[in-house]
Length: 87
Image (cartoon, rainbow, N blue to C red; front, top):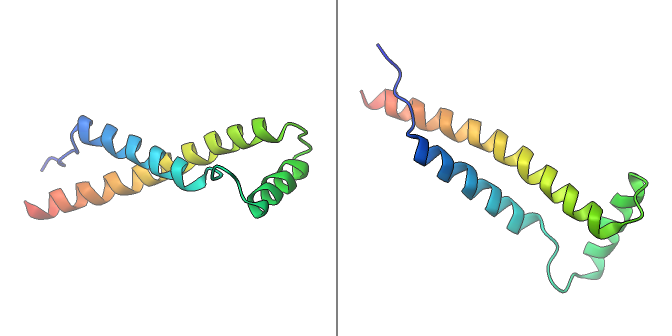
């Protein structure tokens, strides 16, 4: 019995959606609140970074990528199980 695969277009849609949603949730609001500024400043100091804006950009890129990869694998596995269960 061959396992059914999720179509490539659907996989791309899953990954892109996860990345965009994670970015929109994690990014600082505009204008940023005092609490957000303190959070990102403290986090940048923890990693000995002076450029706060650059640090926020790199941190968002890393966070969004990690969440996208993990979430993508989980969602695709769940969808494949549901496809297999329907057979």
